[in-house]
Length: 559
Image (cartoon, rainbow, N blue to C red; front, top):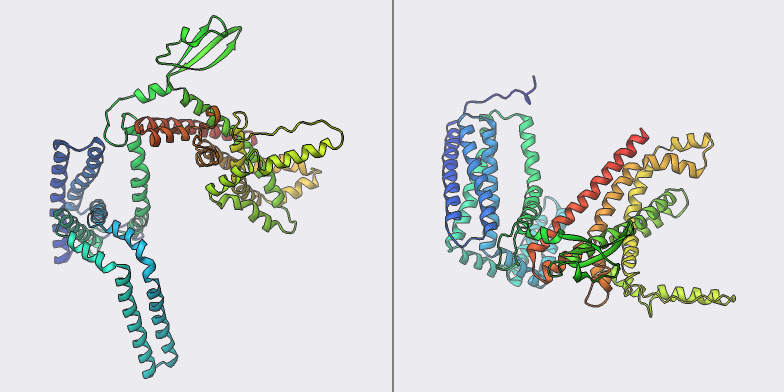
């Protein structure tokens, strides 16, 4: 059998055995330190609940992993080595991040960005020193070669030292050494050295042989090592904030001090609505609704009876409705034209590569720049869109017609504001969707079209019976990504809407993300904004599930 399935444990050397015993003792210490830290963080007052929770998770991983490492290493099991590497690697990373903060290195890097331009010329001279050294290679084996190498080396060294002085890096290093006298900084630096040492101990080839590590296990460990930067970034910048926002949604946190647990109060206020039967269609809302709790959201007739709908948070329901309307308008406008363009660009006509690049350009352009251009185009007075409409109306009226110029106020009319943003967003997304459709079209075998042509199918029949079914997986992906993008629209509306109110006239462009922004970052109701974010997540999740169900039914129909 192969070495990947059978592991042979080699007898350890005295040094390796001593290192393993030291590792066992170290994990006993980390276990006790983790339990002591847990007791301290929960007994000592002054820590916020989210700091306590985050620290508890980290300490539980530290102490739990150390306990597992002690038990398995004592029995010389490979999983004990894995647990030890995990604990020491995480301890090393956390110590490095903490040291960078305490020693002021993060601030130093920011200051270095401001002074870097003063030393650029010396970096160029340092490069010239390298060039001088390479010129000497033309005189290989002679004294001239050594002279050129020496001159190039000294030019590089002197210019690099001057560069350090010019950008202030030496003063920064002096500040770092001055901060080392802080006990916390010394502890973190010691943590880097100790955790790093025990990582090296368990990573060594003799230690791996002691635990009977196979090639498969080594490759797996190397794979995890390459994945760790992404995994750590995911935990710190995505999973961690995600869990934290869920906790915040059950509080009344104002982003500064107040952080009382309110349970489901935020969600109750968001979703609280009331229906009532009206005695008359024009009956006043305060006669039938408790106006201290509910605002009138709307009225409707059903089977000859008039009803009124009240909402505890009227703007939230308006934002949901606007978000759904925006998605209904923007998704078809950005998917259907993209499919048609992809079919056109998939042809063999000359110049297609140029047009592919042209259509994709809006996808790589900055949203801010696009929004500002469209804001100018939509201008009701000097915008080119209204200018074109006016010119067309005048041209038609020259032939005796009496067409009235609509003079559309695109961004300041409640009927057109949301549609205007949807058109702009669709124009921005068409290029990316076209590229996706084009990739899907190029994967369809050409022989199928040839067979359809032989059977007498015209271009429309080929498109309907060959292209659309075989393009279903690509269409599904495009629909999902476009729906998610449309439901998360924010920058387009925030920038393109004129004035200080991006919600538009009559809140006609108030979407869920925009409402979340207003609550969280303008009114500092972070708890309430987090609840809105989680409701938005559920809405997007429901829309995605619906798309999955439609995709399955479509696949079954084609099968």
